[in-house]
Amino acid sequence: MANTAWVAKHFKDNIINQPDIKLRKLQELIRIKYGVYVGKSICARAKHQVMGQYLGDYKKEFARIYDYADMLRSTNRGSTVVVKTSKETISGKEVFVGIYICLHACKVGWLEGCRNVIGFDGAFLKGVCKGELLSCIGKDGNNQMYPIAWAVVEKETKHTWSWFFRCLMHYLQLTESQGEGLTIISDMQKGLVASVSELLPNAEHRMCARHIWSNWKQKWKGEERRKKFWACARAFFKDWSKYDSVENNMCETFNSWILSARHKSFITMLEEIRVKVMERMTTMREFATRWISDVSPMAMGYIEEQSQYAVKHEFKWNGDTGYEIQHGVYKHIVDFFNNTCTCRSWQLKGIPCSHPISAMFFKRFEPADYVTHWYKKKTYLKAFSCYIQPVTNMEMWPSTQNPTVEPPVITKMPGRPKKNRKRAQDEPKKKFGKRSRKGTQMKCSNCKTKGQGSGTTGTSNAGPTSDSGTARARNTQPSAIASASDTESMRSRTSEDIIVSVRGRQEVVDYEEDQEQLDLCGARDRVHSAPTKVVDAGQTNIDLGYSAPGLRWQGRNAISQRQLQQQLRRRQTQASLSQPQVHSSSQPSQSPCPNLSQSQQNINQSQP
Image (cartoon, rainbow, N blue to C red):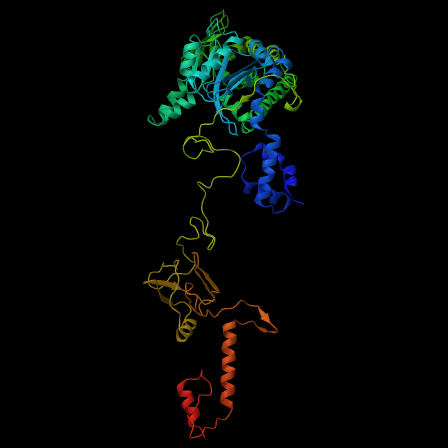
């Protein structure tokens, strides 16, 4: 039976993965999968039951935020969990302001096995708990994202970003150097740029080039400007981080990776993020065992790609460690002693480009030996050497004397909240979901002609007329009914033009003798059994003279109620005429049937 419990059981995963699913969409899923119609009230109760059971109670979870921090510190030794509250919002109560989480395994893994590059970004929470999720993401040896730390704050301001940076600097050993040798990549977040320049002045701060270009192209358009912009995007990059990306895609990947968790309540969301990071670290360890060489698959793929260009270069050797590589109209210098190339690709990425590979082929060197240690298997495994320990659920936590924390006060913004993000004009479309109808050719459902809709004007397949020679039947609705004489003349003529007045204008229609049905493009334009009769399809109070073939009742052709009444009147008239009428001179004559005309009554009275 399709009740609330049945819907909650069978569609639990759909509701959890998409908490904002519409009730009509849930009804459609049930109908497609099981062929059962379920009312909206049952779907609403099932959705509320699943969200209350699996998405958590946010007030209850905020009350035990200190207990959650204690559990993380006790199970994962060396982890940093900072809870920030305020007593000024509600007098006498602690109101949540923010929480910072950096697990010990993530911290040690980044310090020992990842390059000195960090990406920062913020994402909105989409569930009942409103706020911002700040993330700090690094890059591992295979150029994939490596989550380092994350925090949940009430709003994204300079104050919250500064608090996040201070916690990060203290536990990642960045306080003394003030960011020396560190590369930071971010977007134009609120307060982030000012916080970086204040707390990490020695760090290299790169802005996401894709976001910069999306703003510049609104005023400076053109294909040549776009090419020049991307050509000089890496011109001022420093080479200490061995990372040449111009986009902050590692943070964008992390935000989309935890999209389903951002719909849930507070501790449920943080626990799902921790579990996903824990499972990912286990997967990456198993992934390293399948490497076919000591260098990461990403680095080997880049070397193979550059090797195809290296065979086209011309080189000159100086007899020592220097080479001149001719690449088109440009000549680059390669130095194997310092591992440098004048194109700067080797220094920025840490992997030899096509120019040094061309010289390596001449000296029979192995390009993989000149890859920096950040892409080696030994360094890669250091990033995942520590393990994240599991944590029990909230029902099994011991009772403590920690104060109860109230959820933050939600500030309601004016207007209806947006569901979808505004996309740029040149942003690529999704590769899944419903395909857009933009650019597709329309097809008429009536005449099956491409390039027009069912409500547009089309042409029929009638032949040429005698007047114009090329005129065809248009999308018209005839308004004049041909008489019997016109019908006979139409039957006698095989290919004559019939001028029909339609809506105040003359239309030329060409009929052929063997034509059974003429379909005209339009919403209601269809003439049946032409050319016997031309009927206005717009009129509804007339007898069209057409009935569906094969419809019979008690061995006879089926007729309408109006035709049945007409037959009854004719029978009554015939019966009254067949009986003789005797009238006295003293009484006035009475009409035998009120439906007879006056002339017929006079004839009856004159008969003896």
